[in-house]
Image (cartoon, rainbow, N blue to C red; front, top):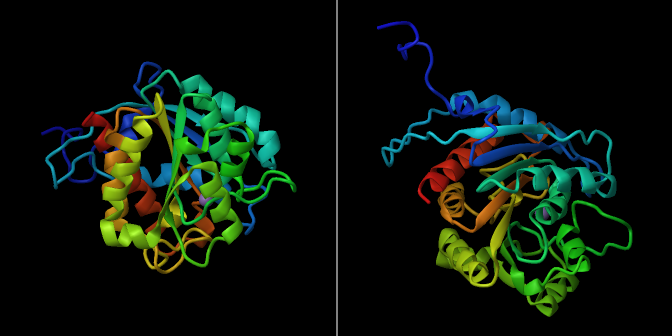
Length: 297
Ligand SMILES: [Mn+2]
C-alpha cells in the first residue's frame, strides 16, 4: 500500500470534489454579503467557514452506500466587501448568470439579500422560488434593500407570487402585514407548525411539485434560520420551535434530487455565533446532501 492509498491519516473528502472544473455540472459561488442585516453580524464569514469544514466530510454515505463523485466548479467568492444589497445586486446576479448554464449552482452567503440577485441570475420569468425560512422576508422596501425584504423586492421586480412557496414560517417572528402581503400575492405559505405535523420534507416535496408544474426552473433559498435554535445557534433569527436538523437534511436531499432545481442558496450563516463547530458541520452536511440528491437525478 502506498501512502497515497492509505486512509491511516486522511481520506477522500468532499473538499477534493471542488476545484477549477470548467465543464462540471455543478458550480459553487461564495457570496459574502454582510451589509444591511437587520440584526448586524458576520455572515460575510460564511463562505470561508463553509470551505474550511469540507475536508471533514468523507465522500461516502454509510446510510446508502453512495460515494459522491460529482465534480464542482469553484467560481470563487464575489467581491462584496462593504457593499450594501443595492450595490451588490449586479455583481451577484452576473455571477449566478455566468454559471446558469450548469445543472446546479450553489450559492453560499452571506445574508438573505443574496436571494433576489440569485433569482434574477436564473432569470425572470420562468423561475419559481422556494424559501425554507422562519421569515417571510416581505418587509417594506421604502427604506432600501435589507436582508429582510428580498421576497418583497422580487415581487416589486414583477415576479408572480404564485411562483413563490415559503416553508417553515415561525410564530411570533413575522407580522400580520407580511402574512397579508403573502396571501394577497398568491404565495403558498406553510408554517413551522404545519411542517411539524406533516413532516418538513413532505411539505417541501409538495411545494417542489407545485412549483415544478408552473415554472421551467426552481431557485431554492435556504435561510438556515429555519432550523431549531437548539440545533442551529449560528443565525440571529433561529428560534426554538424550528425545524429539526434530521428533517432539514432529508428535505435538502429532495431539493438536490429535483431536476428543475437549478440554483440553491444558503443564507444567514454567521460563523461568529458558532458553538463548537455545530454550524460549520451542519452546512457541510447540507452540501453533502445536496450533492447526494443531485447524483440521484
Ligand atoms: Mn430569511
